[in-house]
Length: 267
Image (cartoon, rainbow, N blue to C red; front, side, top):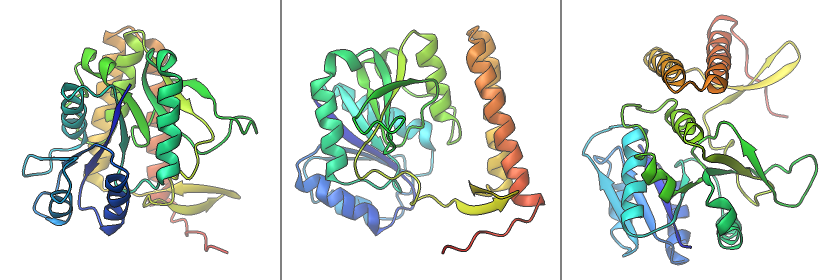
């Protein structure tokens, strides 16, 4: 069982180069799709290392095409799994070693999973790593089973950014594959690198981000596409999950804009 590491990037900064350097120093195979090829930072850096595969279309074509590209190329180079990160997801070599060990030790078991996400939190105060079955998985910090990825015909290239991961989860589940999560992953952080800010409303703290109106419209369109696809596949459990997610998304986008909440000051 072998695996590679993949990124889909857009206007990334030097913090990504630091992570790429230690990955290269450790000898990992890396697949990168760059949606901002006019910025030469990553392209120039990766050209120094033989185990980097750099792809671009010359313009921003989104996450769906990017994920489909790196996963398919890793598959055709005979990799079994691809560990995928967003450019702003924080991890260390301990994170990679943790995922690597679980892949090797539980290879027979995880072959039944389409995707497994990483989570630094423990499960019900259980410090021992576990695999928990899930319905919806966020792509960043996840391990794609490339054999399953191939059978599902990769990611949906019609989805630009929003809900690319949810659409994949729908098709994987509808095809009989499991989705899972690794708990207690060391030195993994999917939150602090995000652009979300702390907001306070009715004595509750929320991590929110105000998307541009064009992105809100695009996200709404993808949700309706998910509704239709769920009905077509007769997967009504996922139809309910997507409706719930859609209502939460709309609520929080309205909350950020209309209620004029002030970000919490960090203590």
